[in-house]
Length: 329
Image (cartoon, rainbow, N blue to C red; front, side, top):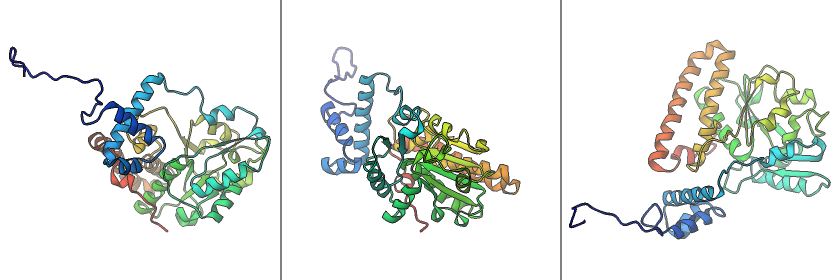
């Protein structure tokens, strides 16, 4: 306290991070460690709680973005490659580690081909066994009957996905719909070889019309959760019959360094958004289900709003998101 004016003055030290308990150098070290390890591992190694590691990683990322200037890429990998002729490249989005193993194996056995593989470093659920993954990668896209209701037959709603994190959100949405409205016939389709969605006249690995429509029936509304800008996938669906049945969710350049699930919220790829979209599609096709659909829409719109309040208060995703596991066999 100043004896002359009676005011409390605080001296600022430039070497301190935003949190006065840590120096900027330590915050930078924690952030850099998080680029090669999980938050959980870094927290255990440095004897910190996960919330603190999350906060310090965000400070590190914000400083990296500030130094880099405008962080928006001119083109990301998928878009940069997909402007080429269809027989010169392949784009793979393996949903789990087993599929990634078989994808890399396939990439190493071909020549004169550009292979783009989109995969993350964070621990993710293992959806398929080694044998199931091999077959899934061989065909490029398949119905996950075990994740669908009514064994995937005669669907009135189709949830499709490509990419590990987007698959996780789609599976979580399928689990919610299974619990909230088990009478709704929902099919889950996963795509690991993106170009199978295109027509075979332009993409050699593209599915013929009959096979494509066995996966994605004409007249069945489809919500597609995609790991990338939606323009890349629109060009694949463009020449498919009745392509208006596809609603595409993807990267919108929204969100910041908050939490992983909050990025899904801002880009409208979250499980809650999928449930809302699904309920809207079901109600449009079956007026008898409108009351149930409206109940779900209201419920999960509130969950989206509550999530924003929670992460601003706690700095991490709630346990129902962070600890979610598939539990339907």
